[in-house]
Length: 568
Ligand SMILES: [Zn+2]
Image 1: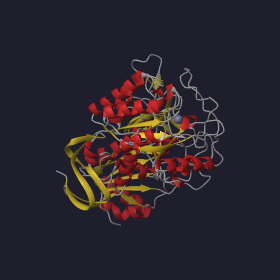
Image 2: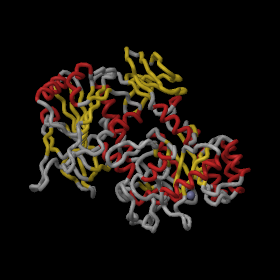
Image 3: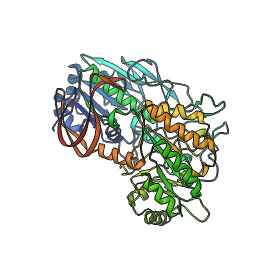
Image 4: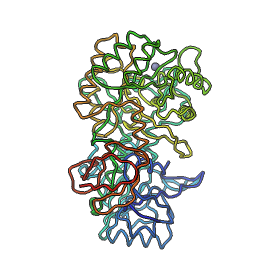
């Protein structure tokens, strides 16, 4: 066991089939950390003991029956100054965590661990570094139900209806010179549930009670499976009376809670952790424009092309068959924009199905004269669980944009994220297709322009992607064209670069090929499988770069092969 990074991460084996569990998709913690660029040492349960002397921080996910000798070693390690952050598991170490498991309120056939169920994490110490990014209760799905026995309760649990649940959700306990933190909610399962929604869209969803989101429209779309709450997860839009949308990306706030926990503990233990920042050149976020060519009217396409040219940005064109004439298709390409597919399972006679996808993909690929990288489904149509991602995978499409909002009142982050992410199947296996949700459609027409500034602010705060969809079909409306021009300008003013989905995909995949070979004080030896131009590398310690409630030293450098890099 070679420990390079003093942050160890261990996922305990999942409960056997037909057994209760406090955590779902526990291995998704590796996807969360990989996307955040937080380097770490992967450990199996058996490797923890031998790794401990070289670790300063330990993150574990789930419950485990640990051997007595390991319990003893973990206790000694924490008491000597180590820091342990556990997600949804006490591992029989009640004394170390200052908490004890709660049992079922009535003897339960099948038995096992008591879940927190669905609810909300409500900060009790809102200025604590792990919670300072929250201004409202945070929706979760599952977790471990415990009672505090000496730990400080940083956050409490509310039930699914927003009522006090009487259980703690976030606990911190000092032991000797070290500390142990328990995130009781199922952080990994919550993020997957919010991002992917209910698996298997087979029926209409339930509409919002204010009339703004009639998702029960007889058409199966990704939003029919969304799990966020109309009442508790949406917020009013300033300047648009009567309209509430999903302003904050709830899954991203959960990701940040974990990252804040890690860097809070890094700071408290004086540990320098290396990070590959989300974006090059220290960028705070990225802007992305996509266009679905519904109607394929060449005059309107030209108008949109002119607006992009004036704004000096490149975008992604999701082309629906039969596509534009050769002249417009050529102009899209020569201006540097991206050809992408727009799968149609909505027009009369076009049923949802793999064979239909195969045919449309083949025709579009032939028209493009190149392999498409990006897809978005017409009307955000969605059926089944992961079918569309599997079809993308089969055809070499590496990024999909079909999770999103089809009604005004569900605009914003109705799938909880402004980041690209790799989805998972029910068995937890990762699907090698990035998803970049579509949080809104044409400003002015689909939703008032008033939603733009809140979404821009959130993309920036969460360091993700501000994705705006504009249909050329609406470019007969001057106000829509003006709204897109304004969005481009405002994004640039806030420090965003506008990228195509092809660029987003290439960047994210290249990031995943970077590893840390050695850490010597402020000098890192990194290896990059593919070149990363102007990558920003961080080292957690007093420095000018701020993120996740912590400060970092930073350096921006093009990575390729193996390099020694000093982070000054
Ligand atoms: Zn469309």
